[in-house]
Length: 552
Image (cartoon, rainbow, N blue to C red; front, side, top):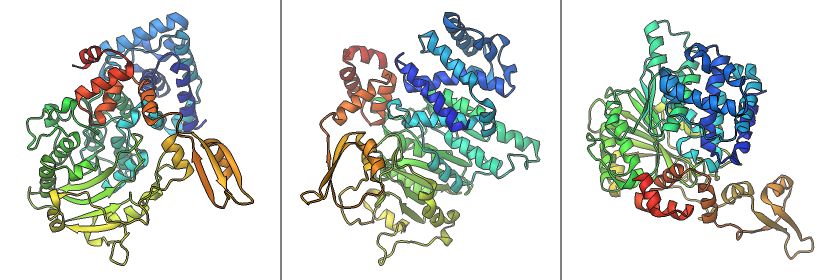
């Protein structure tokens, strides 16, 4: 059984729990509690768990006795466990009410092909579950999960090295640091090439660190790190509070900070920001370039939304500060649809901290992977080959080797250079630069892309309409797609769009989230606290006062 098959089998168990009122995120958290015990047994590391609460003790029980024992186990490991165990189980509580459902999960996990799972890597199995959760729109997990292909590209270009301190200040489930750790492992024969014992210890205990605000997500990050043999600290807290002041002197930062504003629109509580704003991404950007060593080598690759590139006021000041303190050498404009949180337009900023604080950026190279690109999604996923040209153009970050693909003769070349004078001359020092012209301003979609956008709606395809050979194909997009591989000719497509509005779909999706998850969802849309409370109260048909008391 492959890792992918195991992931699918585990994920399908969630369907059992949906009737128990369990959200997808709660299910992954629940799996984490149980998988930890099983994986400890499979890897021979159970000595860190009291004998009374090990896997075999769990599987020996059933029914009400099992549920009672499981709750006791969670409390005991959270209160009296040590090290990573305590961190993972701290504040743990089960959301499974039905003992039979709990028993089914444990029996299924126990019966899986763990030999194959260990061969392919238990860390890969767990990451597969996290990605599965992120891809499920109803889970709301897309807010903390960056597509693997993008993580890998950013890591490959940043080339983390042995002895470097790497960090993700908004680490989610720790994907970037896992990739950085794997990159170093791949280039050191899985760390066996490191002869220095202190350096080997550093790679395990200090090299790859992170910070995560959300407790449950932090728990997933700890589990992910442990399964990849990373023992470095992962802070539970807010990087934009004074906790973040201790996070500095890094050689490399890889991150995708959360979208939106701070709660209520207030400014960051950090007292060391030169330009504190209510915009999370701008504050994270400040933190990131300030957290790098000023040795001329420390670098970062950061996913940021478009508003960071053009925001005025403090936004412009922060961009100017970035251009001064760092060499912002590359911006990658990402295509739409690649994040599970739909509709967000994003970029990757690549920069290196200078030895001085002035005049480090001389030119900015921009690669446009957004214009004249297909819409990506579940049925048309982003693949490594989509980045091939960009990686070639990037030229290992060596500006002297770079060559523009844009020219007057090729105005749609995706790779273009702008001098610092060009940038400074722009209104508000905007870095939101586009030049590519498409033949039409009309969006073009394949049926597969429409499936991603609108769901599995009813359609009618009219072939050769009003002609002697006219014909019609009726049905839902998923049913029709497989029949169209070799079909040619002229078509008119009619869509049934009246069944559910986007608003109705949004409400249905939110109703499957906890109130906390709903709050986070709206916060990431940039809504203020007052409007969020009104919206949650309306969607859930509860008095505003109740919601207000819960979050204020």
